Length: 212
Image (cartoon, rainbow, N blue to C red; front, side):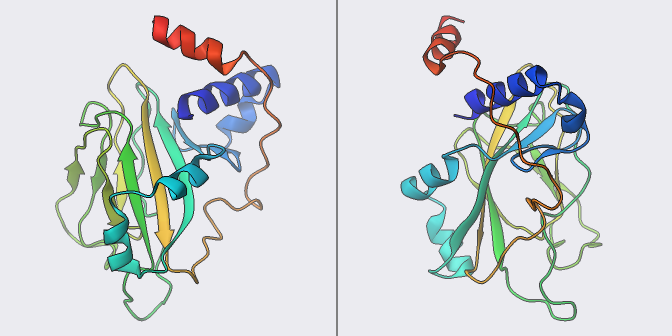
């Protein structure tokens, strides 16, 4: 699903001469996150993940409560020789003066083995409490299918992909039922992606990948 959607969007951008739009930030469901790094909302992915569940759900519910909900799912694909990300957190605190328990967590699931060469994710411990915490950064290397769970206020960054293949990473954001992310995928900040331009059949692409 991820490979097909990425290929379809790149083809559409090329056919409709939208490369400049993509470089300048992208679209509401397909955005540029630094050079060579794309954040995609793959059609049908969230529904598939909700139906399948995941081995991480007991921990997610222990952190957020039994009524925790999936509020976003997507995939970040890092191309070979992409730029490393800047330090960031995916969201801020919900109270300016009081440190509250986690209201949202991220689950990262790499679709290929992700070590230093493939651009694993680097974290700074304790920064979900204090953004300026003076802690040694930690790079978490993970095998395909592993789940990395962290408070979405935690400072982190994806490292540069020095490998020869794309590095796709599924991510899911779970939250308490009252929380709404109004920033990361706001339609006020990004234009909608135009309808995809047909390229070839998915069966044909699958056959070519198997042949290669």
